[in-house]
Length: 174
Image (cartoon, rainbow, N blue to C red; front, side):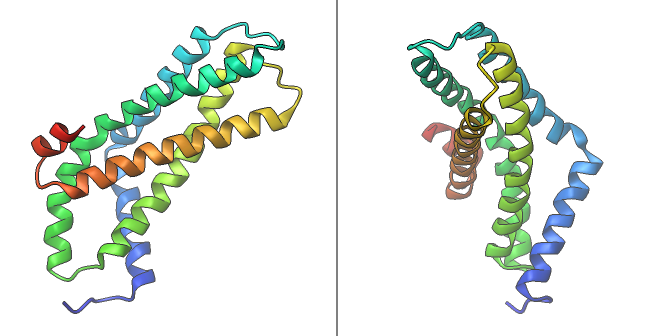
């Protein structure tokens, strides 16, 4: 297949297309943000009033474990990726863009969005659990853990949705 533009132009065009899709349908992005903010509220309320004691680190691990469990909520996006897969296959086989350009554009945008979501989530959780925030490194470490957690779950979703032909077989695996 002969491609119209070089790889970097394709990534830029695909990122613009995704941004335009979010602009046309902000609810698709809004639902992701709302879902994670609600989970942050639940986690924060579940572990409210954690004091700085010997158990504080254990509570932090419990909060992280709970966040991992809420990360499973990201699997609700599988249907969206499965629908997008048909369009992706049609355009890629027609030679509109490289597969790698599509996935790089998607990964860059989702990484940025999840970074913003993670900061909001961690701010809500830290405020509600009343964790000592005088040390910014605690907040930074927790934000990094949460960010990596969300990226891992999002990567699993993209991998699962790209690996199977239809939504039914993808859901059977999960």
